[in-house]
Length: 147
Image 1 (cartoon, one colour):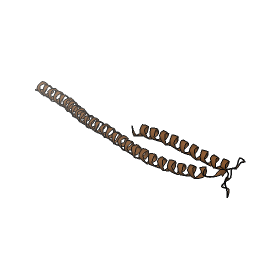
Image 2 (tube, rainbow, N blue to C red):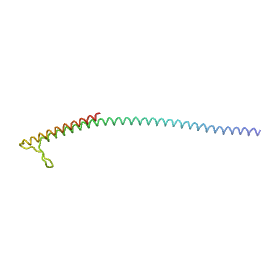
Image 3 (cartoon, rainbow, N blue to C red):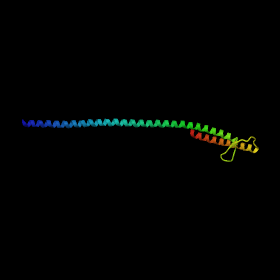
Image 4 (cartoon, rainbow, N blue to C red):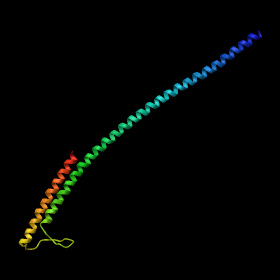
């Protein structure tokens, strides 16, 4: 009888140990499955974040490109206005005689001689030529910026 009890006790003990081992193993498998799920969720979040960052970078670059285009158009308009004012001033100053000393003084005598009239006409022609040349250069530069 004692032997039967000992054998039954050992069987119970074996079942307890084996059951404890099985429960520990099942818990670790549950834990590993939870870790796998967490890792999968984290991976999806990382993918989503990378995709979002790529989209943000693309939107930012598009916005910057549009801003550059607008600024370039504004710059062209500004440069054209500056050029026109410069041409007006150059033509206005060409109507006067200029001293050779520095700083130059622009003057117009009460009565001009033929030589002075020729000098003024030459200055006007040179100013017009310079203005035309500068206008052509500006057109070429503007065309490059447009393209």
